[in-house]
Length: 213
Image (cartoon, rainbow, N blue to C red; front, top):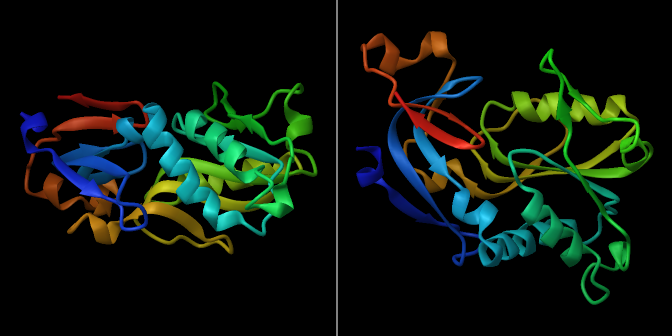
């Protein structure tokens, strides 16, 4: 059973925040990974989400933010981040600034898009991208292209977990990193060593969670 192999990991940036990880052979939309990272407790628990928001907001003390674009169910964290960023005592550049929180729609072709009614929250706005997990960088790159297509200015990228750098001028700020999960690896499906050794996939994973096979 996957559930019996859970390991609890605490963030070096904020020990009040923890995630559960499980080792195995997992398939995502873009790659195969050897650890499943369960962030449900951070994304959906109000006190944990608030701690995550405070930790991530600290990176943007001098960065203007008009809109937070959320992926992977991070809207609760984004709401707390907006509250934190707009405080008058810490983040003067965003003091009392009304911050929008939106999520892109994925159309039938798998493309990200913003409907006409929310496009004014992106056009000529300073946009922070907030995601749960940054592994291959493909989702981040696609999101940045989408934001820039609609005229947004990407001010930063924040993630709960980031495993690797990718080719971009924008640094990913994260609460957890690959060094906190010893041996974490991600592979293209065609190069996965578990597949080569005929190890069956334990589960299909995405931002909603995992489904055992």
